[in-house]
Image (tube, rainbow, N blue to C red; front, side, top):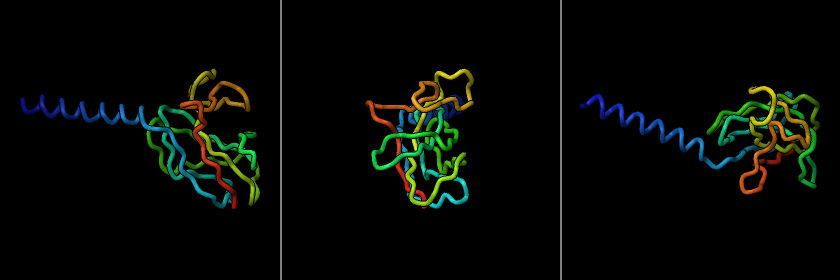
Length: 137
Protein backbone atom coordinates (compact mmCIF):
# COMPACT_ATOMS: atom_id res chain seq x y z
CA UNK A 1 0.00 0.00 0.00
CA UNK A 2 2.92 2.31 0.76
CA UNK A 3 4.21 2.01 -2.85
CA UNK A 4 0.78 2.57 -4.35
CA UNK A 5 0.29 5.73 -2.30
CA UNK A 6 3.68 7.17 -3.26
CA UNK A 7 3.03 6.33 -6.93
CA UNK A 8 -0.31 8.10 -6.79
CA UNK A 9 1.31 11.14 -5.17
CA UNK A 10 4.08 11.21 -7.80
CA UNK A 11 1.58 10.94 -10.67
CA UNK A 12 -0.60 13.65 -9.17
CA UNK A 13 2.38 15.99 -8.77
CA UNK A 14 3.67 15.41 -12.31
CA UNK A 15 0.17 15.87 -13.75
CA UNK A 16 -0.14 19.10 -11.78
CA UNK A 17 3.18 20.38 -13.15
CA UNK A 18 2.14 19.49 -16.72
CA UNK A 19 -1.24 21.18 -16.22
CA UNK A 20 0.42 24.31 -14.81
CA UNK A 21 2.89 24.49 -17.72
CA UNK A 22 0.11 24.14 -20.27
CA UNK A 23 -1.99 26.79 -18.54
CA UNK A 24 0.71 29.29 -17.55
CA UNK A 25 0.22 32.84 -18.79
CA UNK A 26 2.41 33.31 -21.89
CA UNK A 27 4.98 36.10 -21.54
CA UNK A 28 8.39 37.37 -22.66
CA UNK A 29 10.87 38.94 -20.24
CA UNK A 30 13.82 40.70 -21.92
CA UNK A 31 15.86 43.90 -21.65
CA UNK A 32 17.78 46.21 -23.97
CA UNK A 33 21.03 44.46 -24.88
CA UNK A 34 24.22 44.36 -26.90
CA UNK A 35 23.62 42.27 -30.04
CA UNK A 36 27.04 42.76 -31.61
CA UNK A 37 27.67 39.01 -31.09
CA UNK A 38 24.76 38.23 -33.47
CA UNK A 39 22.44 36.98 -30.74
CA UNK A 40 19.42 38.46 -28.97
CA UNK A 41 18.20 36.85 -25.74
CA UNK A 42 15.16 36.75 -23.53
CA UNK A 43 15.71 36.08 -19.84
CA UNK A 44 12.44 34.16 -19.59
CA UNK A 45 9.71 33.08 -21.99
CA UNK A 46 6.55 31.25 -20.95
CA UNK A 47 4.68 29.38 -23.68
CA UNK A 48 1.45 27.38 -23.37
CA UNK A 49 2.70 24.90 -25.96
CA UNK A 50 5.82 24.16 -28.01
CA UNK A 51 6.57 27.00 -30.39
CA UNK A 52 9.04 29.75 -31.24
CA UNK A 53 10.52 32.96 -29.87
CA UNK A 54 10.56 35.09 -33.02
CA UNK A 55 12.59 38.27 -33.40
CA UNK A 56 10.92 40.90 -35.58
CA UNK A 57 12.28 44.28 -36.55
CA UNK A 58 10.04 47.09 -35.29
CA UNK A 59 10.08 50.85 -34.74
CA UNK A 60 8.22 53.54 -32.80
CA UNK A 61 4.93 52.36 -34.39
CA UNK A 62 5.39 49.05 -32.50
CA UNK A 63 4.20 46.95 -35.43
CA UNK A 64 5.99 43.64 -36.08
CA UNK A 65 8.20 43.84 -39.14
CA UNK A 66 10.39 41.32 -40.93
CA UNK A 67 11.71 38.32 -39.02
CA UNK A 68 15.45 38.52 -38.26
CA UNK A 69 15.81 35.51 -35.95
CA UNK A 70 14.02 32.80 -34.01
CA UNK A 71 14.59 30.10 -31.40
CA UNK A 72 12.54 27.05 -30.39
CA UNK A 73 10.45 27.09 -27.21
CA UNK A 74 9.19 24.26 -25.05
CA UNK A 75 5.78 24.34 -23.46
CA UNK A 76 6.07 26.01 -20.07
CA UNK A 77 8.91 28.14 -18.72
CA UNK A 78 12.00 28.69 -20.89
CA UNK A 79 15.03 30.45 -19.38
CA UNK A 80 17.80 32.32 -21.25
CA UNK A 81 16.38 31.83 -24.74
CA UNK A 82 18.92 32.91 -27.38
CA UNK A 83 18.00 33.60 -31.02
CA UNK A 84 20.79 33.86 -33.59
CA UNK A 85 20.21 36.94 -35.73
CA UNK A 86 20.07 36.22 -39.46
CA UNK A 87 20.71 39.84 -40.42
CA UNK A 88 22.83 42.63 -39.02
CA UNK A 89 21.09 44.66 -36.33
CA UNK A 90 22.65 48.02 -35.51
CA UNK A 91 22.84 49.77 -32.18
CA UNK A 92 19.66 51.76 -31.56
CA UNK A 93 17.40 49.51 -33.64
CA UNK A 94 14.30 48.10 -31.97
CA UNK A 95 13.49 44.39 -31.90
CA UNK A 96 10.20 42.75 -30.99
CA UNK A 97 10.62 39.36 -29.29
CA UNK A 98 7.35 37.50 -29.85
CA UNK A 99 5.90 34.08 -29.01
CA UNK A 100 4.72 32.12 -32.05
CA UNK A 101 2.97 28.74 -32.18
CA UNK A 102 4.16 25.56 -33.87
CA UNK A 103 0.93 25.12 -35.84
CA UNK A 104 -0.34 25.05 -39.40
CA UNK A 105 2.93 24.41 -41.17
CA UNK A 106 3.96 21.47 -43.29
CA UNK A 107 6.65 20.19 -40.88
CA UNK A 108 6.83 20.03 -37.10
CA UNK A 109 10.03 21.53 -35.72
CA UNK A 110 10.71 23.69 -38.78
CA UNK A 111 9.98 27.41 -38.49
CA UNK A 112 7.76 28.21 -41.51
CA UNK A 113 6.35 31.68 -40.78
CA UNK A 114 6.69 34.61 -43.15
CA UNK A 115 5.23 38.04 -42.33
CA UNK A 116 1.44 37.85 -42.51
CA UNK A 117 1.24 34.06 -42.93
CA UNK A 118 -0.71 31.76 -40.61
CA UNK A 119 1.87 28.94 -40.48
CA UNK A 120 3.71 29.03 -37.15
CA UNK A 121 2.10 32.42 -36.55
CA UNK A 122 1.97 34.54 -33.40
CA UNK A 123 -0.20 33.51 -30.49
CA UNK A 124 -2.83 36.01 -29.38
CA UNK A 125 -4.39 35.20 -26.02
CA UNK A 126 -7.32 37.55 -25.48
CA UNK A 127 -6.50 39.06 -28.91
CA UNK A 128 -3.11 40.43 -27.80
CA UNK A 129 0.35 39.54 -29.09
CA UNK A 130 2.73 38.05 -26.50
CA UNK A 131 5.88 40.12 -26.97
CA UNK A 132 8.51 42.44 -25.55
CA UNK A 133 10.31 45.22 -27.43
CA UNK A 134 14.02 45.74 -26.77
CA UNK A 135 16.56 48.17 -28.17
CA UNK A 136 19.87 46.91 -29.53
CA UNK A 137 22.95 48.46 -27.91
